[in-house]
Image 1 (cartoon, rainbow, N blue to C red):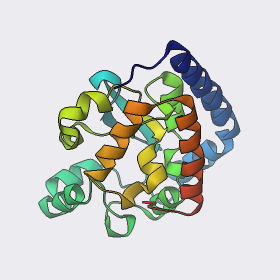
Image 2: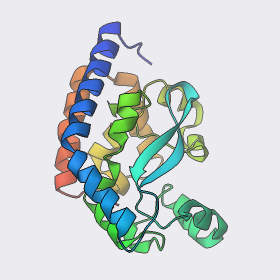
Image 3: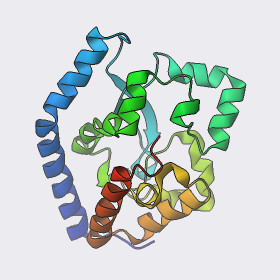
Length: 209
């Protein structure tokens, strides 16, 4: 694992803050519209979904997303053994069209990646970076084996090499290998390359869930 330079850490954080502030200002109407749909639409309830993820140096944090599921979705998943097994076997995710917890609005938010926009709040807070390994729940850490400390040696990101390479079409252990590759070789040029790769994948809807 290569030690990251102070200049890289400084400029990465500077860009994270700058982009997050700009994005939250520009996307304010989108936040307001989604909030309106959840506060006054058919599926009333919390606008945001929060889940504990593991971040830099094993530090847990609450990740923010627009809620795409029914209220109490996590509890329903853990209580349904068959559904939970399918969830684990599929790389700790369920395809949107096979997940009974996802609402119609939620399916649209996921398909367009709008559900991920609140993560700019996490980036501004310093929990995440624009680029980095995708943050995982604690149960997923076992997938990284002896390399788990390497995986958690950098800030998790809203975009990452795994997403840029195919998102949900790539499962463990290949996903872990990609995330560890980024953590080991992270630098500014690698970050910019991943940004363009991710944008391309989103527009092509590669692995969207």
